Amino acid sequence: MRNVGEGRVLGVRAEERMDQEGSETPGARLRRLRRERGLSLNELARRTHYTKGYLSKVETDDKALTPGVARGCDEALETGGQLAALVERAAEACPYRGLRPYEAEDSRWFFGRERALALLVSGLTERLRGEGPLAVVAPSGAGKSSLLRAGLLAAVRRGALPAPGSRSWPALLFTPGERPVAELLSRVAGAIGLDAADLERALAHGPARFAAYVRAALDGQPVVDVRATLDARPGPDRRAGGPEDRRLVVVVDQLEEVFTLCPDPAERHAFLDALNALSLRPPAGDRRGTPGAPPALVVLGVRADFYGHCLAYPGLVEALRDGQLPLGPMTPAELREVVTGPARAAGLTLEPGLVELLLRDLGVPPDTPGHGPGPVPEPGALPLLSHALLVTWQRRRGDTLTVEDYRLTGGIGGAVAATAERVHDGLDPHGREIARRLFLQMVCVGEDNTETRRPVDVRRLPGSHFPPAATAAVVEAFARARLLTVDADLTWPAHEALLRAWPALREWILAGRAGLRLRRQLLEAAETWAPVPPAGGVRPGRGSFRGVPDAAWRTPGDKL
Image (tube, rainbow, N blue to C red; front, top):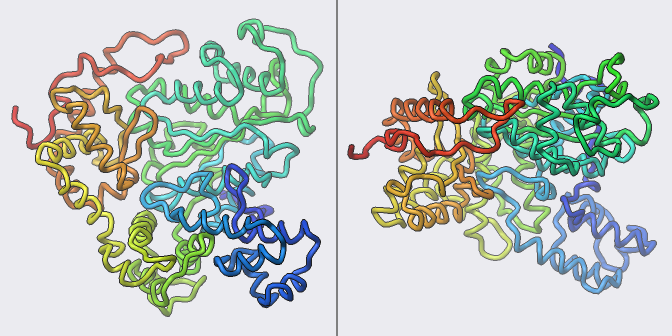
């Protein structure tokens, strides 16, 4: 088995660390302003009375740009207060995301995975030739979602791929959900300006035709009628490698949802076949394909405990054999950077001893070499660390995070539970009962007792069990504490670590495993009874809950 990254490794420099909007870190802004004015570091040091070495570390974000230094540099560079304003804005934003993943726009706060990101970019570069998807395999809580979002997507937008125009390639990231094919078609259509219904008709002709249609749209060919496009005679061959080779970048996170949420095996196959076709070089003899130019670079993020499920699909077997990045535990030096890097970027000060205490609570002894062998945190520890840092930041006074503030959170092991209990205890008895029912609706237990999150549209839950106003108040309370994620019409736990770290939820799940499995079977049966989908095997949207037996909504503790 060959893992990615054995070839050329593309590093990601600190000076390129920008977020989605292109906003710079304070250090990068200082460097740009200095260079625009033609000043050397020596001259800036002379004008501000700070040493050249110190200012150099500020510019590379190895040292925080403090308000005092920012004001001095503003005066020396005559910026009109740009740096001081940037530092003030950064101080108002929390650089830790808690249980939620770092998004592409959070890239300036994303630290500790530079080595893995370099390997991932290198692996994706190898896939430019059209050799199938690239798979990132990791246990839950290893930081896979953040790596794909704040790492990979942000790097592509910075132009990290060695392909002309790649920084402007359309990029999309999504999770499969209950209707993975419909989700794929909707996302691709939105990214390149197509009609999802046309893509659906193309897919009905097979995954190769679907990929050819996407390729034609990326090439700028006028596409009005999908059938006419698919049957048209080809024009002159255009060989890959030129500046006109525009690609899609498709990132599918939490691929395991294909197995846990999608009840239709045929749709699973259709989804995975479509992704595979997008990432492969069209056959040379296919008159509809463009030789050597696959429509997309496809990256799949999958939980390690679903590795065996992937082996039942030939396209995924190829990806796992020839293009996978196993995301292992962080080194002590990388864990230290997870803590200190965001603080530096936000201009925060960490009280002496806080970093060592955090590492010790993660299970890393203080004498462990930074990059050498030694104890590693338990799988799933990263989101718990991030949540503890988030709550510590919320307790801060001024711009310093202290040991005492951290101890008051309950520590890495107790911060999530303490936050969840605080929100839960703040509800009235009726709200607590809704919270119990709601969280159990958002947990999926497989036949092998594997537990995963399940997005739920709370508006479509039966009002007899989930009164709309009271349910909305419960969702808002937990979302405000960053324990639930609310996106458009769906709500789900912010991280699977919550399923293990909150004792009350753990008890609810353990007490109701059999019932949760039964509910999953009932919901899948209800989907099976739904009307036959249109041509192409794609249902128009998420299934309705009408007709689902009332037993599907009962949870352990309900009165029958």
